[in-house]
Amino acid sequence: MKKVILAAVAVFAFSFANAQEGKFKLGAHVGLPMGDIKDSYSLNLGVDVAYLWDVADQFKAGVTTGYTAYLGKTETFDFGFGISGEIKNPTIGFIPVAGTAQYSLSDNLFVGADLGYAIYAGEGEGDGGFLYQPKFGYQTEKIEFYAGYKGISSDGATAASINLGFNYKF
Image 1 (tube, rainbow, N blue to C red):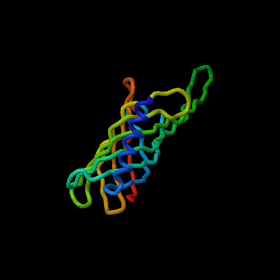
Image 2 (tube, one colour):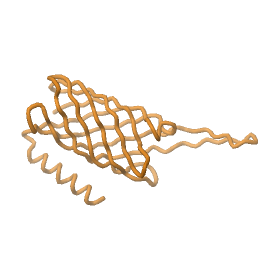
Image 3 (tube, helix red, strand yellow):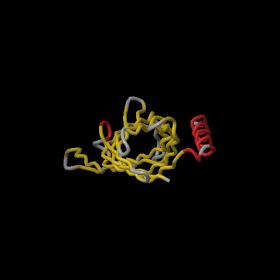
Image 4 (spheres, rainbow, N blue to C red):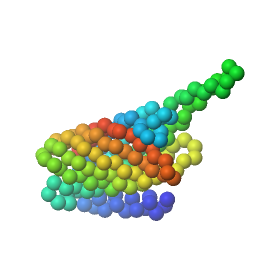
């Protein structure tokens, strides 16, 4: 875990040293849980911070982090004999530490992806996992809107969601 954090700090430090060549992005996302967690979690919410620099014409790469949370549903169980109960699933949160890349298909359309590790930051015990998020979006000089599929895989299970996001570029 310490190595992952140190690597992220090193990448961010390199990014800040080259700040004149790139752009910061600050944004938010909302999504619907899919797959393994869709029955227990109702919504994915989060904030995103990224720094990208120009690698080639129409291609940018950089680093991203933030916080993403899956909000738990309350589930009702019927145990029989007139006995029932409710269980509130806890919110699970993750801090992504990832590389990000974006290719502009035109002045306004882009495809991109985030790949890295998501550190578990939710209530109770939990594991982090491999993070992947392909994206497709619309951009102007200062803003982006995107749709993406976010997956965090760990030990054969995946916390996943289909997301809509917004970024402001500085």
